[in-house]
View 1 (cartoon, rainbow, N blue to C red):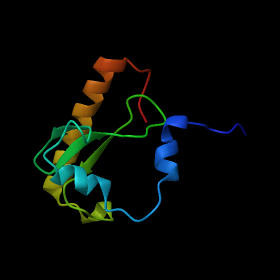
View 2 (spheres, helix red, strand yellow):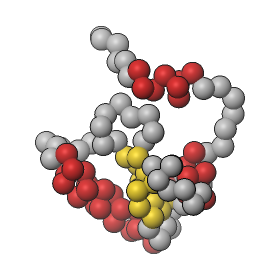
View 3 (cartoon, one colour):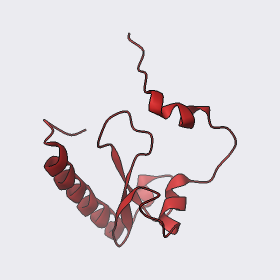
View 4 (cartoon, rainbow, N blue to C red):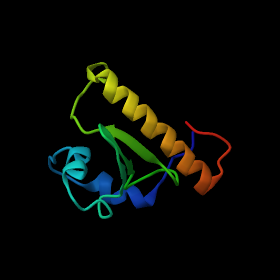
Amino acid sequence: MDLLWAPWRLKYVQSTGKRGCFLCEAASSKEDLKNLLLYRGQYGFIILNKYPYNNGHLMVAPYRHISDFLELSKDEIYNLSELIKLSLRILNAAYRPHGFN
């Protein structure tokens, strides 16, 4: 197997110490551009990955810090699903990919 090397991730890989949740920090900050936060919905947000393996890698996350998807309410699930659909439309317009994963 070939080694997957993404040199732009080195800063992240070499970082030490315990930090808080980067998603919670981005959601609570007012500096959306600095935090790569693209869109805020009612129950969640769309954020770019700061250290991606691929172009266009983004994340959809709830505002509530939870460890299990099953803890989400129906309203949160619906809103996050709508954010995923919005993300796919944006990525499709920007990159014209052959597919998504």
